[in-house]
Image (cartoon, rainbow, N blue to C red; front, side):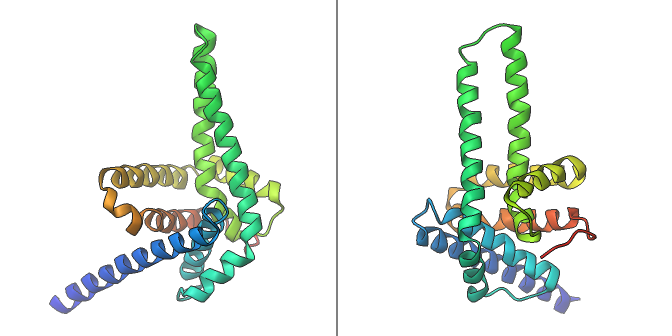
Length: 203
């Protein structure tokens, strides 16, 4: 019993170290792209290597991460910056709604709020979809939206995990450079992969 217990503790410790290592790799590759061009390919690469580990049981290494980062550099940036633009438009909408009053303002606010929630959930799915399927650019967004609507259980769980992760990171700031992105990507990968239809053509 003690042997199994300590083996489990050792396994958990290895996973924590591994997640910390992945977060440092993400920071390194984000800086490699000068931040503005590095964040999205670094994030997509992390989703890709986590997917390889989960589905194909492949051990993650630096070379694998670099391959995905380099191979998907421009596509992931296009996807990421489209999301940034959409997010900025929603931000402006919330800002403009403060100048409106009355029932119509409440209706518009509710609509924008609902769209923002959907947007955030699509944001959670977009890179798992990107690394799992070979699609045209527009279909990545459509597929991510489809996952939000058709997989409510996984979507709710992803939402809960995301909120909890942000809460913990904001409360315990020193964890951000160690686990700021890697833990979230890890759990979203686990949940999103279970949501994908096995009959779909994955890459």
